[in-house]
Image (tube, rainbow, N blue to C red; front, side, top):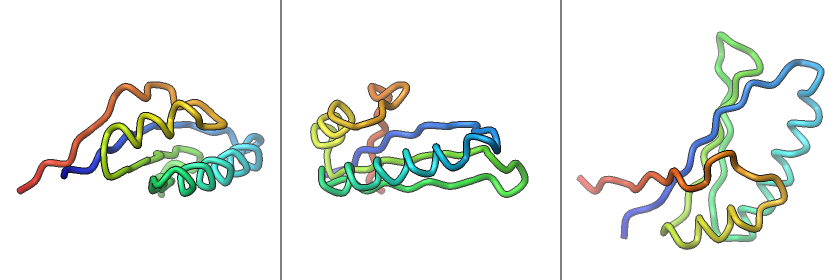
Length: 85
């Protein structure tokens, strides 16, 4: 079965970085408990520009995890499905 993925971009001012990092830690714990994988990357040439990936084995698991997340994703309905090649 193809995996499901959502993507969220965030730009975080340096003064808000500690709060953002704490938010990410809470999300990581939440998604792990919901059988999802959660990654965050920061753009090398633009500190504070982040992209968050949340992945699950299926769309329903991912949607359920987003619905109960401690911090809401801006557009959880934009789900990408893995293309099996």
